[in-house]
Image (tube, rainbow, N blue to C red):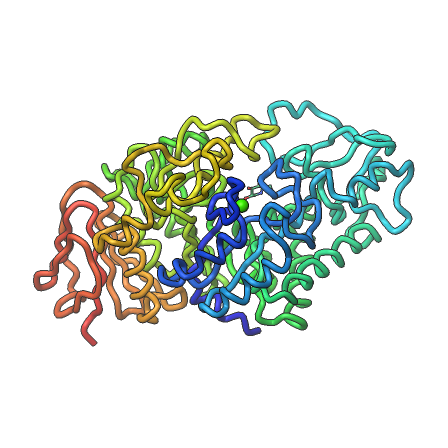
Length: 532
Ligand code: NOJ
Ligand code: CA
């Protein structure tokens, strides 16, 4: 197994719609990204994760794929993607694509053809069809609950959806096969096996074009009625074995944490989702309001303090229990929920949070714009994200990148009304250009932290992370050689750390070391190299 590069990855998530528009149609595109690669290299990221950029009707921002092998025309061509991969590699940047494994769009040819069939496909159905499935009232369902939708074509009965109605589940078979539900295929039936082969074909197609791997959307949703995801993980282990044989350097990163089944792990990392309790207990922001089930949590990174670190630490330890060097991705935020800076959170708070994310033993994933502290924009109408669940409006975290003080913040030269989503109208909105010329900016802080991380092996994902104060201020040792002390709150504080005597300051803001006492102003942090 090669793919060791992931341990040194610094991921940057690009929502392609909103990053950079090169042809003035109001929507981001691949050429826009190519033009901004120098910026990403300057910042110090070395891996881009793109949300789906394949042909799609975009009812779920591209997570409804109509053709896995074709870049969506609005983003460019397959050749543009190849050009991007090459140009990125020249700058030491790898590309991860988003593999939407569990469902397609209703506009995929596979679905259109199957929906017009009056009997099952002799080669095996790619989707799940039933004449008389166990229907229930789904009106109150959250998106993502597999349920039955009436067939839109000649095919009688219903199809199973995976997320929204317009996202029919691909048929990877079922674990349980009750006699009264004969439409359930076993996992080794022709349809499910055909879809497995297609997953390999899709991965090979893009890996042959030079991409470095995939973030796998809804990775654990594939086999249905699969307690503990046992059969789904058999599938992914099979995929990993195939990758090891043919593309040993390629990585697959799941959406979420891989289930532990006592078998070798299939994915190259876990992802601590923004929505997950472990992540929310650190960074959840009450003000954005799209995470109602997390609102009771007071996050640890909160100006008034009052949050706990233990829930996160336990999840972290659990992730490493059977594989000590296990990699865990943690994001500043993502395209589904929030931004690192939301509502009342102030810019000055961000430094301590970013210092944590970039020095804790995680593979960090920076959501585009979080490096300048872009905010969640409340009250926007939905765009491409909430078709069947109006409460799941994700527009606020998807507004265009703020580059400079040109019209549309330099994102696009289209007329403002043509933009995919509006630019943050705040005249004081942060921009890359303004922060680039301010050495005290959040942007420079991120860059400095990434440079320190790159030049300090102990601060990367692999070496040990040992907490020595799981309270305010947070203190932990990396690789037993470096000490990080962080004050996420608005109150000054100090901590005595005997190991710190004689330590050397590498990077910090608002903190000082006096003998063995680390003194921290509000939102301060300090990264120290311990004496040998
Ligand atoms: C998770 C993705 O992050 C989200 O954006 C999408 O809507 C669902 N999966 C369905 O594919
Ligand atoms: Ca464009």
